[in-house]
Image 1 (cartoon, one colour):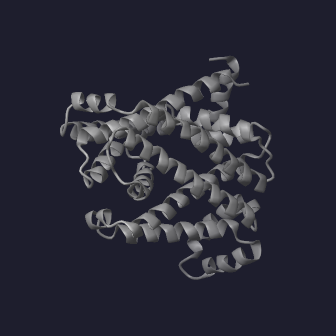
Image 2 (cartoon, rainbow, N blue to C red):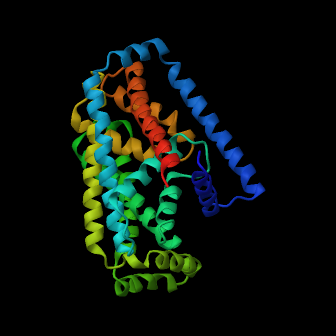
Image 3 (cartoon, helix red, strand yellow):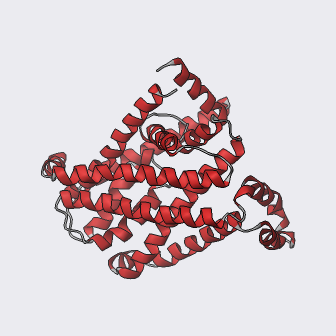
Amino acid sequence: MGSHSIQNVKSLAEMAPETPKKDVKRILITFLKALVSIVLIYYILSKTNLNEIWLSIKSANLILLLLSFSLHAIGYYASAYRWRILSLAQDMDLKVSYLVQSYAVAMFFNNVLPSTIGGDTVRAYDSWRKGYPKLESIATVGVERFIGMFALLVFAIIALALTGEINRQVPNLWLWVIIIFALMFIVIEGIFLKRGKAKKIAKIFDLPGFKLFKKQIDKFTDAFANFRGKNKALICSLGLSLLLQINVIFHYYLISEALGLNIPFIKFWTIIPIALFVQMIPISINAIGIRENLYVFFFSLYGVSVASTIAFSWIAYSMILFLGIVGGIIYVLRK
């Protein structure tokens, strides 16, 4: 790793400083996450064997897998354009090519490098090192991630209305999805509302029982002040997020077709958004174990074997790991 890359790591660490006490806590949390992953992987592999998984992987259609992998390029550029739109709303002019590289490096930190530095921290740092304020850089990345999660829920709601198998297996799932959707919608409204409207809504925190949260809310609104009234940026970024999720769903569907799983395309509109949303819960190492068990649960509803499902999960994850390695190479070589 070159000297400039070492300096970059130091600068990233400055954005997330650690004390010895925090370091011990981090190690403990990492150990617990690893334990969860090991237990879940052991549990799911006890239902099959590695030979069956390998045979399923070997039988996959290579052309469909390559086509599925190529969709990551569309995902990178759609994400980069979304990030650029929100950056411009913060008066930050960043080139799409630079943002695509930043996404690739973030993939490296998220999925390959054992570090406390997450991909979102890397992306915020990449804005900051171009001379833009740290607060606005962090806020932009946070809003972009949040809008992406919101788009996931939009697809989950549509899909839950069109399918019945998962609703029957997970009682009240639709209710929880609607509640989370409503809460996220309120947050997005709070970020992008014009200042006058936001102030009217903020008056609720002057009422008895709400004043405790007023200081935290004030800090939150100040951090995202530049987004207020930027409805065009919100609509465009939401539109790109929806297109991005279609691309993601199609990516996973092509992997399933390569393995001959014969799951209808419309079912992935429910499975993938919910699975990806749950995988964001940080209770294991990079969702290892959670990912496999989630797909086994969903795919079993359509008669897919455990071995084939794990093959599906591992192929999808191997593509992400490969992209992470590419991101690491970009990180070492970039100036």
